[in-house]
Length: 373
Image (cartoon, rainbow, N blue to C red):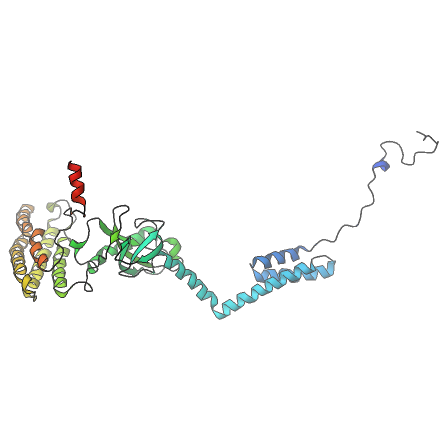
C-alpha cells in the first residue's frame, strides 16, 4: 500500500518479518569457570581440602587458556583449601587428632557414667535409674541424692555385643552388692540394684564401663545418707559377724529353682549339704571370735541354735524321698528364724529389723492412724 507521500513502505507490508526482526545482540559475557566456584565452596566449607586445592589449580589453567572469568575466585578457593590441607597434615603428624578424639570420647563417657567411682552419690537430669540417665552430677552422700555407686567394672572389648548381652553382663552388679553393703538388714525395703551401662552410641566412643548403683524403687523418692557398710565403716566385730552370716545366706540362696522338692530331690539334697556346711562355718566363727563382753552371751546362744539345726540339715541331705526331706527340712528351718539373730545383732549395734518385714518409714505411724480414723 503506498504511503501518503507515495513513497514505498520502508518496513515492508504489515506482518513482514522485517517489522519484528530483533536488534543485533551484544556479545555474551565471558562465563565464570565452574571449577573456580567449586574450589571456593570446598575451601569455605573446609571439607576435602586436597580436592579444593586441585579444583583451584585446574580452574586457573582453564581460565588462562579459555579467557574465562573467576581467577580471583580460584585463587581464594585454592588458598583456603591449601590452608586446610596444611592444617590437616599438621594435626596428623603431631598426633593432635588422637588427643582431640580422646577428648571427645572422655567427654561423652564423663557425661554418662565413667566419671562415677565407688562410694559416690549423684543426681541425674532427664531420666531415672530405670531408664536413660543424662547429665550426672556428684553430690554429697549426706544430703538427698538419687543414687549411690557401690561397684564398677569393665566389659570385654570388641564389637558392640547388643543391648541384651550388655544388660545380662550388668546383672553381675547383684553379686557385688554384699561387698559394699554387707548388712542387708540395714538396706531400706524400697532400695534396689540398678546399673548404668554402655549404649550402642557410647560403645563406639570407647565406653566399656558398668556402674552398679543403689537407688529407690519408689518413684520420686531419694536416698539420704550413705548405704555403705563394709570394712571402711564397720568395726572388726561387726565385719566378722556379717561375714559369717553371709556364708549361711549364700548357701540358703543356692536352693534349686524348682517348685517342688520331688522335682529335683538330688539337687535339694546337695543344697541341704551346703547349708549344713555353712552352719558349721558360722558356728565356728561365733564360738572362736573374741567378741566384746556384751556380745559373748548372745553369740553363744546363736551358735547353740545353729548347732541344733545342723544335724537336721544333714538328715535332709541323706533323705531317701521327698517326704523324708520335708520332715527334716521343716524342723531345721524353724531353727533359722531371723528373729533369733536380733539379740546378737543388737549387742554389736547392727540393724535389728529383718529385711522384707515391712518396717515403716518415719511418720508412717501417723499415716496409719489417720487411715484408721
